[in-house]
Image (cartoon, rainbow, N blue to C red; front, side, top):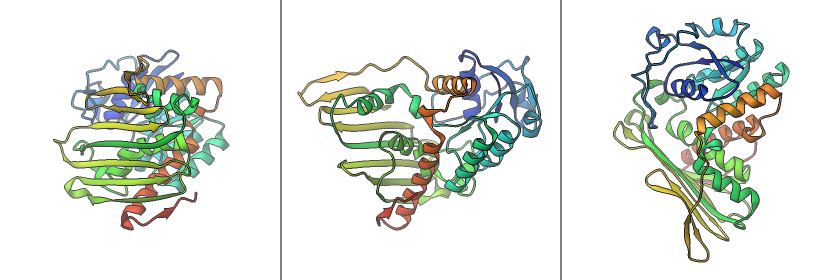
Length: 338
């Protein structure tokens, strides 16, 4: 499958490198308005993961300055959209209209209405649409997904998902609510999507926190109420610019024990109800490679991306926005009706 990566920022650079390891995928084109990046010099790229930019060989790859040029290229089967969030909807609609399969970075769109328009366009076009919710493919989250799906640890009693980082200095659009949605929306969409993947939509949401985007502060602690589950919390956000380290973690308590993971130094561990602690095996895979390989497989076979459903990605957008509404209401319960 011949793929064009549109946007060569942090995510675009990450996807370009991952595509080189995906069987059946060919990096056919790259799109950027930066001639330095089009030449393959991605060394200045920054991000919140330990994946520095590199010097890449684009000599055999088509290079376009404009999105429209790539979409008009009949030799391209699919596009991988790694653009600022406010461009996700319009470029996805244009790509689907041009007959391309689309992988679009998270958040899928700025709001639920935008997601609905993308879903409708995908259905009409007969092309695949998938949002790049990479946490569904991240190795450290696979034991959690497997335990919940199989019921091997019994009932899920409570869960906490936390994700924190410094306010990014590499993309000023992220601090503009009408372009990036802010830190909570852009960052915690991962954890909200994991809740949707595991549990579906809650009955109601309440939240508290602080928002001062100019100061690099956007924090939330949200309670998602699911019938039969004691507590589901999503918390974190931006803690000032530059210095604050990135971390992600979860704690999930089942009848059979508590599973925990943190990038701050705790590998996936099950603290059993029997009083024993044991490290759990995780797949030796790269989440970005797995995500892209799954997209290519689904697009090539004409299969629905059930492992990463775009409808669930749309629900995650709505639910993350609802958390922000709950915070604005000072902790008041907000009914979840989508």
